[in-house]
Amino acid sequence: MTYLEFKDKLYELACFNINQIYAWQPDFDRNNLTRWVKRGYLIRLRQGYFAFAEYKGKPDYSLYFANLIYRPSYISLHTALSFYGIIPESVVQITSVTSLKTESFSNDFGEFSYKNFKENLMFGYDLKPLENKSIIKIASPEKAILDLLYLYPFYNSVQEMRELRFDEDFLYENLNTRLLMEHCSLFESKALDQRVRQLFKAYGL
Image (cartoon, rainbow, N blue to C red):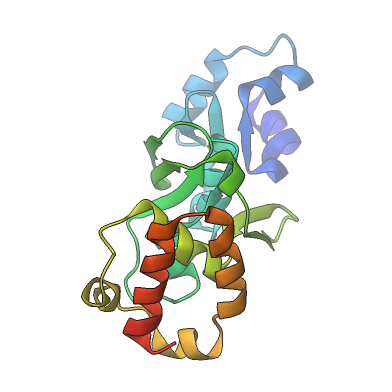
């Protein structure tokens, strides 16, 4: 099999795993993948998962890959907050939450970090379409804030909340505080309730 034949079949997937290849070509020579990675045609995302190098320059595909290479998961925390413009700084890691164990991966698309979450808290994400009809699972702004406050308990005072430097225009004009409180109740965490009160106090919500 030539690389062009391989690419013609799988390119639209953007990201694929070895099982998808074998489902198409049971006698596929796995050594091809090693050669194509060395030549820069493919990028190894983690063991058994690959992406075509051309997707490196396309926006948001790293978020899509984050969903696929460790499932179930969805984008949240600092990456989601940056995506919505709620925090000013760009983020180095692509941060997700998962019901699996805490994990991290590093590849040419970036650093992928996954924080363990209770399975019953894996809700509150939106589905954002990409150009090839693929979907990114990313926390809503309200859920991303709650996920952050739940997983990082040191944000527990007005001063700490102010140091997050949340965009106040977004908070006043776009944040759905009713939805945030509805989601917060599902955590059944008095500590999180207290942190949300400190958040509201810090930003006058």
